Image (cartoon, rainbow, N blue to C red; front, top):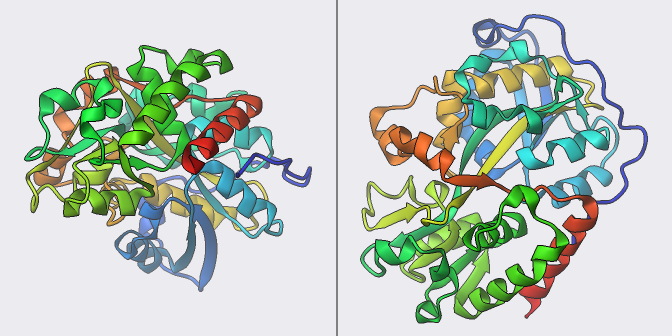
Amino acid sequence: MTTFTAIPARYRALALFTGTTAIAAVLAMAPASAEEINALVWCDHTDDALLEPFTKATGIEVNVKDYEGTGTALTLVDQSQPGDWDVFVVDSTDVKRVVDRGLLAPVDPGLIDMSAIPDAVKAEDLHMVDGKWYAFPEKFGYNAIAYNRDKVSEADMRKAASMWDPKFKGEVAIYDYYLPIISQIAVGLGMNTADFTADDIPAVREKLFEMKKNAKLVSDVVTSQTALATGEVDILVGGGEYAVASLMAEQPELDWVLPAEGGVRWQQAIGVFADSEKKDAAGKFVAYILSPEGQARLATSSCYWGMPANMSAALTDAEKKSLRWDEQPAFIKGSQRYISPSEDLDTKLQDLWTEFLQQ
């Protein structure tokens, strides 16, 4: 089991870059000399179609290491030397905990057009500490239910109880990440994720283990997406646009919905490591990722699609349609954030998930 462990005191927040903040200037800058930065990221940042234009424009090579789950990332950081990492992509709900551990440097809001990010996504309470920005929201979407419309009905999928309904035994894949799935069950039970406490765990545990009886597999993004696309399963619990938006043109039977009870909105953010010795280069990469061009490439990354935080993203009409661009106000209103647990609660939730996986 991955747990949050103490981070050495050497990680201290530092002020971050005071030079040019215009995105256009960053992207237009001629390469001066070969430079490399190391980024700890989600898999959508590993796409060459995202990275190569930045390197071509700036001469900065980006070495990426992908992970799933903040606990895993912190373990990787613990096993590294100070200065090994420059850029960190992390769940928005974990930004404050990462800042508390001294891992992130403050970032200059002048790097991006903050007015282009919806207030609910901007979520200053998640990304700011003591009046300073430590990470910027870059992409968001929903953990809801993805499904095959030829095999199961939309009416059923709009009911949260379908996640644990025994009539779907053997037809379900579950995304293997404890926070979104536990949060999704909590929402389905009428709970508010912002108020979730250890007292709520027994009710969630009951439904989680009922759901496990239906599961054919519990797996990562790619494996669970593939299972749905190939017909191995008909339902993906925790699925959303990230799982099917890139497939819908060729497989129109694939779809996703937020249950009537609501879904969970995931958000990921990007920041710069406090120990980075290449903050200027890291800042240029952050600016690129949040630019209209970078946002379009990130939103449609080959690993998974999602909504760009910057509403000026240079997406095509067809791409916007797949992401249900026009429906976002209703989707945002009908979703809740992940549970944002204390370390003690997080340990209890990870213990529950370990028990779930081992059953």
